[in-house]
Image 1 (cartoon, rainbow, N blue to C red):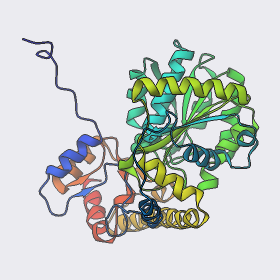
Image 2 (cartoon, protein in one colour; image 1 turned 60 degrees about the horizontal axis):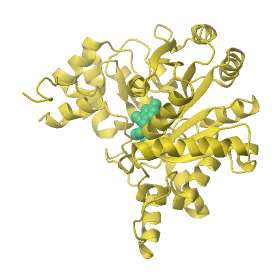
Image 3 (cartoon, rainbow, N blue to C red; image 1 turned 180 degrees about the vertical axis):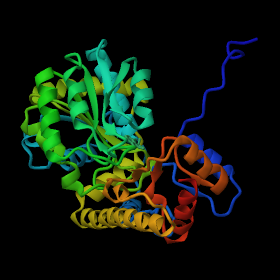
Image 4 (cartoon, rainbow, N blue to C red; image 1 turned 120 degrees about the vertical axis):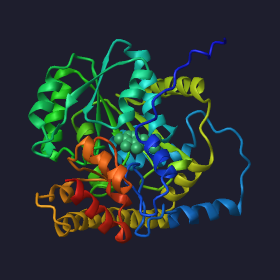
Length: 398
Ligand code: PMP
């Protein structure tokens, strides 16, 4: 007997567990639509040219790997602030944004969660129903009671804005509300400009704390378009947190590069907040890793590489949009009667297909087509080679 004898087997992570199952599947025509990763037209994970060029430049004068500052590379934090808020924006110019480099978007959320827990230990955290699976786990692990607000209307295959506003209106003042800035995961259904205005007004009226999760900037409509909500929140006078990630938009998944920014009232407040974020980081993992942040800073701070990145990002985004339409057309050609046009209207990497758990299980078991039990499929994993097969498989289970 030891302390560990009674340890129970934890359930597999719903998404990463699916990938493990996929990897063990020996069928040649298997397709993984489970994990949220962008693959190119050849089914390959891209290594962006801008990243390769930045790495070559870095290798010309290789640097020793000393510890970074707790809040990361200064040039990285500055570039992130510019990307998220606008380099010439009032919050950046006045120095009232506290930004730290984080271990992916997940790390940014976790630093923010730990920081908020110290400030407001009894606050309830509200996440969208449904949401990225890890939101609930992450805020629960940080010690919060986690509830949800209505987001999606499955029958309408769209946003349920009335219920969303009603739920936020009913939230206790001081509640922390996590909203996806763009490319909502898993539904692919975003708030429109007027709906953001309504939500921001409720956040303000009810004294709710906004935590924006922006993991897909540039994957929806464009960098500026996807980040437009930030400008709205600034204009409304909100003080809020925003986490970001370069996993998808720079295809740097494994480098774990993300950030957390906190928009404060003024520069002094921002420096106090930054000092507290550093305390949280120090006690979690001390300092961030060097390579990913250096690559991102090199890309964002070099006008040529930045332009190349935007071109490559546009290519990824437009490919996803084209694939969505091909999927709609392919399903029709495969004999699906119902109107699947909603797939082309959804935004970002995912399609919330509306397929039931049973249908998703059949797809997996009978056809080796892997999506999540909730019906979420990553359309960015589709290409000319697997599209027809996937469409026929879906047609069979529908
Ligand atoms: N938030 C959302 C909504 C996501 O979908 C993801 C990635 N799947 C993340 C955060 C985390 O991103 P990262 O992989 O950079 O930690």
